[in-house]
Image (cartoon, rainbow, N blue to C red; front, side, top):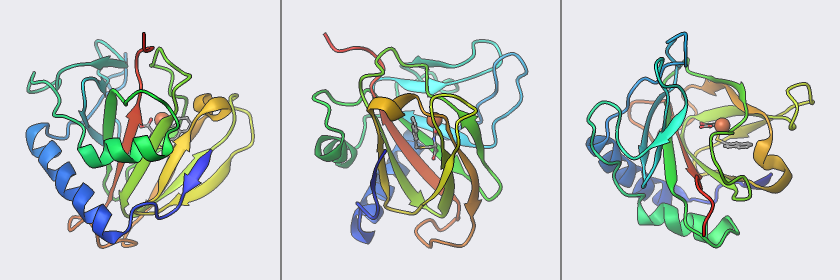
Length: 198
Ligand code: MD3
Ligand code: FE
């Protein structure tokens, strides 16, 4: 994994947050639910870009072009984020999906692989904003040993190659570690390719 601590300085984080506020105004955060059980995830989500990742009881994990509640197309990916991808992703096509996760105080994300994309040759790029997240990353088997990394506001992580199918999750959020978000908590923005370029 390619880790870029403090890739975004405070001014860049504030500018990205302003762009993110506009995204959320057009595409409100929703509470995703697990396939089959319908149990809610603790993270709230929205997306920007041509495709967005969603999940619900009836139809499960998938990418789609529209917001599940408003039915509207996702807003565009903010140009700043496309610039970050261009600078560090090392992949010659733009991202198609930007998943926005919001972790309030006690939200977490269990260990999982990102496998809903057709193109695993493209990396996944993550940007953290707000309170520190305790990130856990292992190997391609759930049994592989894991390491913990504290992802701070402004940190960027690129997962490509061998790491693209690594198990990963967020153990917890360290409340009160950032004053970027007035409401507290943590945003993570994840840029992905979904389809194979032709
Ligand atoms: C490692 N999000 O949305 S981002 C997810 O902080 C997700 O919200 C976490 O896992 C978050 O699927 C972690 C960092 C990340 C993203 C994709 C990965 C790590 C990854 C793909 C492969 C391996
Ligand atoms: Fe993931």
